[in-house]
Image 1 (cartoon, one colour):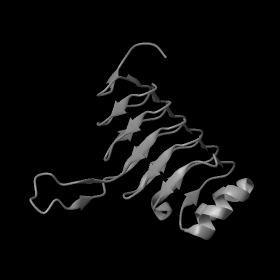
Image 2 (cartoon, rainbow, N blue to C red):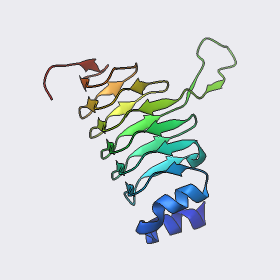
Image 3 (cartoon, rainbow, N blue to C red):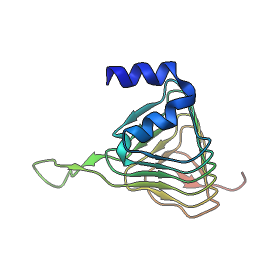
Length: 150
């Protein structure tokens, strides 16, 4: 982890290749800010031209799929892991997260486990998404709900 962290910070053009080395599927021309946190990279599937901005967290205990030309803005958190609260043993669950093409996950927004968003979905800053939404949705609030406009 130490060596990977050093390489991540020192070699920005090779961040996609470093993730591929650890098992991620990363498309062409993707960019990752220096302060991005990625856990369990072998569960990542990222399309072409995706931007992951500063301090974003991709917590990929379960699979995270991000469609091409999507943007994960600063401090956004995609969390593909939880616990089964109905079981007294409290086991770990790993529900997948899937974002369609051209999605925007705004500043400090949260995408919870098991969420699927269609193409062209905009998640406003600080929204918390805990359920699926279809393509062309415009989401705001906590919990997130569809709003008018873009």
